[in-house]
Length: 79
Image 1 (tube, one colour):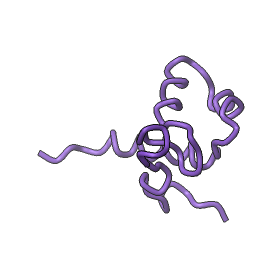
Image 2: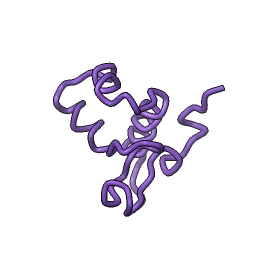
Image 3: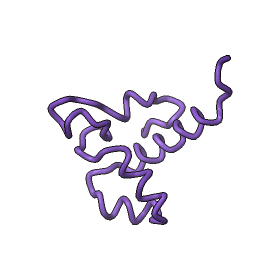
Image 4: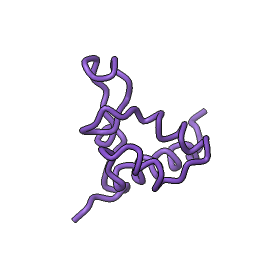
């Protein structure tokens, strides 16, 4: 059964290793920087187009990162 965003934490979906892409945050098990997702979405690409372009990305991981990021940004900041 596939994990959902509520079961995962961002640090389980995104990794950073100085030996991989100079330490940039990448999707787990890939060399695809997370920023690529947001840059492509900002450029108007659909999720399907992004997944077609970056075949190593897992749809579930990408959706979970989007959901977790949205929740994080929507949460009130501590004063």
